Image (cartoon, rainbow, N blue to C red; front, side, top):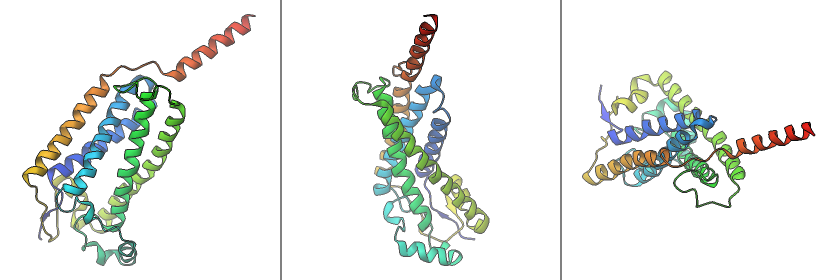
Length: 239
């Protein structure tokens, strides 16, 4: 059976580093003692998304956005006859293209609003950028984007599961580990400039993570308000 390189090593590294950063940041999001780790992994995710978007314009075949079959006609054809249509797409199929585009857009908005709220609370390397902003409102917007992002990620996983069960011989799931699919297609290749740019992107995400992680963190404002409220209640009870 023919094998073709579809996902280059940089594409796979971005994919798995981004997945890890999003999951870890989400898991630590409700724990105040790990707020700096939550922000650091979120900043790493944002940096990776930015470079993934850049990669969508200058990266190798199958990673470029122009290779995404986003036309609604393609979606209709795929839904009508997925078995026949599946092998036409060495990279993302029409449904996966829309889900991945949504994850990138909503993911970037999630990181932007989260970092804005974090800075507005007086935390992180850019704490002074939004000194007068309403952190609570920004945080609510951040949480709204999270509620949109999670279903998109679940759709991505559901698509992978469906692909694994229905088209296992193609090896789509394993291709994100090995880079190859069991199909005959034009192989993805990297040039020198692409290697330099993506190396800078991966290194930048690690540097941003370190900077945010080691930036000053103020005590959570909500905690302070709650403590102040409790003190007032105690004083009133004594009166």
